[in-house]
Length: 329
Image (cartoon, rainbow, N blue to C red; front, side):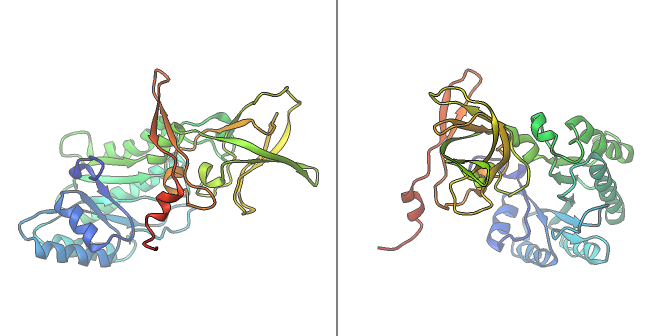
């Protein structure tokens, strides 16, 4: 809402939401996906305080999926807790339980998304006996477009959007059809949509050879490139400085922090030297929000439009920006 989004189109997820946040969202007609039995009671209390308002909620569900460790999010659907939560909310006349939400990480395959969609449909049949709810939300975690150098690092090739659509929409269409009474299908593909819209650019500050291994130390860190600390080597492009070309060899590219885990690429075969710039692709997921104020502040973000016009979308963070939150002399 603070950045101009229509509140009725906002979905509020997460395992911990303050009562103040819940009340603000619910009274603004946002959709709140309830994550626990404790949250159920908070919503009931808000409904009690505002009997003239209809509060829109969903239930985040948790169930076992083939080959995956059980998630810590949502309400367990394999006992009576989910049915109890649904009943506790539904008995409040001004609480509208509009659907179910299921977000599970760890398996991006199309088969997994089909399984979770089918399980969600089964839960809907169990809980919404009077007819389908307004929505079924199958969450996110979908893979998006990526260079072949990154795609090849997956154990199985990531599905395309068309393959995800087939896996998710087919069981929905088979069960509900496509008429106006069918539930709205909600998908949250944030990472899949935004991963390839950002590139991170840094400079080679130093090179060294240790134990026969060539190291390039750059002015970025793992938090700028893959802050979830995954094991993928993000595709990179070297933009040489004013130097002569040299034979390509294998380089470990690492960052400016004092942590041994600060490895941006475990072995790039390229021509590299001090002063070169390195461009890392597919850095749009989480890097903006998870970059900590550790050693260096957050860099500027430059937006480039279709005409190659550049605009500062976010200026570089400064030490003064960080210190304004500390009320000390």
